Length: 132
Image (cartoon, rainbow, N blue to C red; front, side, top):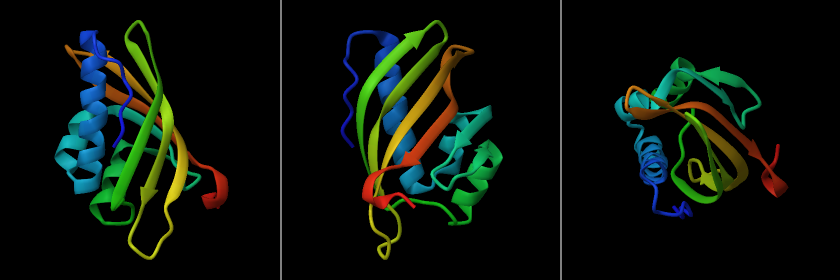
């Protein structure tokens, strides 16, 4: 994973760590960690052209319906506005070996809450030759 969040601000360092932790947990299907990172109100506009919530994402991942075998990310922008941080960039994910890598654009929105951060919005869209 390539992360291009500049160091220096405590919140910026924390968001960079959370982004890395989220990727590692998703690849490992670590539902406990993802459950802590995801807000109860999480809403996801997924590359499957569906809008889902926290419960659905964790269920699909836990049952092996979704899951990646590799993930490479390039963060292009990080912006904070009050209690919200938006992370935008591109990623390439590979699912089981019989599938081609998917090139996507993504947006993650983190919210400061109770002394920490939680992911409240995620949007990932397949782009380029790998688009459905």
